[in-house]
Structures are given as C-alpha cells and as structure tokens.
Image 1 (cartoon, rainbow, N blue to C red):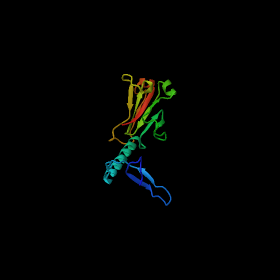
Image 2: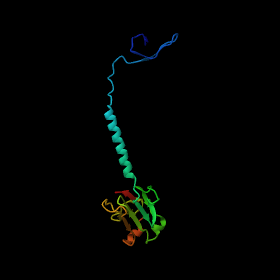
Image 3: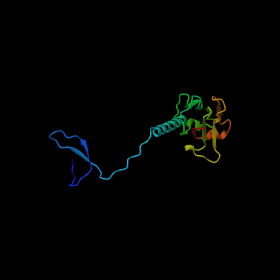
Image 4: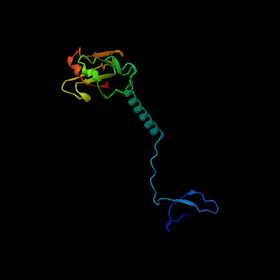
Length: 167
C-alpha cells in the first residue's frame, strides 16, 4: 500500500512491483468523480456524417465545372487553363486595358459564375458605375456566354477592376 503524508489515500497501482523493488503508485482523489458521459456509436456516426457533408458542400461551392470561364481580351483569367485563382478575388485590369478606351472586351461563360466590373480600383462601388456580366440562370445551357465591352457602353473603357464570384 502507498501512503501520502501519513494519511490514507485512494491508490491505484500503475506498475506491479518486482521482487526487491518499490511499487510505483499514482495518487487518486478520495472523492468519487462522476463518470464522463459515453457517446453512443450512433452519435459518433451522426457527427462524422454531418462533418463530411459540410466539407463536401464547402468543396462543391468552391470547385467549378469546365464550363465556367472568364476571358478578358480573349485571354482566360478563370477556367480554360487559367485555374480558379481569380475566383472571389478583386483583380485590376492590365494597364493596356485601362489605357485604351476601346478595351476591355470581356466574356463570361457558364451559368454558375458572374463577374462584376468596377469603374474604381479595389472593386469599390461608385454610384451606378459597375457592370455585372454573366448568366446566373441554371435553366440555361451550360455553355452560355455573356459579353460586354465599350461597344455596349463607352464608359466601360475606363473601368479598372473586377471580381468573379459564384452565383
């Protein structure tokens, strides 16, 4: 038996003593602690299922299918080999697009994304000077494309930034 400070304590033997050695003991509390609630297998399975579903839903909202593409001056900035790095990011137009009042010509393809173009840099609204391009209508053909350029509105040639988002 183990003794602590001359008083009797609840003891749990951790290692059995070998002949000629002292017993290694761990001191425990003299008061009884309530047992921790046990999770049932059903509770654990439910939690795991919900966590997996939430992860899949998050992944599904960030991954785009091959029809979702954005082009500026016929160069892909999203999809079509350009990747998805521009998604949900404010981007500035290239300097040659800002310097020319006849540019940019933009094309947004697919029914799951839209691009908002801003007169100001940093994707800031400025009165009514912003333009949303894209068809967020899931009933339309998946290869639907929408275009916009200074041919539609001369002021678009002065726009400076854009942001691509999922519908």
